[in-house]
Amino acid sequence: MPGWLQPYLGENLWPEADHIVRVVAAMVFGGLIGLERELRDKPAGFRTIILICVGACIFTIVSVVAGGPDEETTRIAAQIVTGIGFLGAGAILRDRANVIGLTTASTIWAVAAVGMAAGYGHIALGALGTVVILIALLVFDLVENWIGDVRDIQDFHVLTDNTEDAMDRVTTLFKENGLNVRKRFCHEEGESLLVHIVAMGAKTKHDRLRIRLARSNEYTLRGS
Image (cartoon, rainbow, N blue to C red):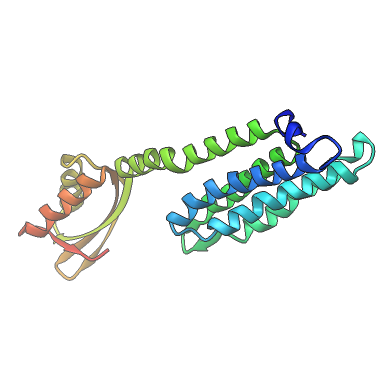
């Protein structure tokens, strides 16, 4: 039991007070992370994250109390990792070529680790883990969005006159607008040529090129 609680509860009056402190700490840690998830309308929200963190904490406490010899105390706690793995896998979905839910699954996994830290009585470690997780979800999200804007990949379908240099003309147009052409292929449509370009660059440059193509008499931008 923490020393600051002894004057109020006494060593023998409430022998499980230390466990209560650990569970409450896990609830607070999970609540802080869950609040961020809830405000962003994520599948694993406020209550879910709290339950995961508190559940991991209680399982860890039980493993320590009922484990017996030192080598046995980690058996129950070790199964938390397996159980959280199944829970996190259920949060991952595949939408055509995209995989969504990886951040939610990773958050569930990390929150369980915070709960285990609290369950073992390492409150400071749990608090540190909570801060690091919140930084990753809040601050690093801004960095990730910035990188996504700088390295945005978009598809373009450009219809132009079917001349020998049509492909080169369209490619040059993309390069002039600061975009990196990753893939390009085309097929004929009557007397015209439909050029499909996959380009990477800043989102603002993609938008600027789309406006330029929409205003051009030489090119027609098809829906992509």
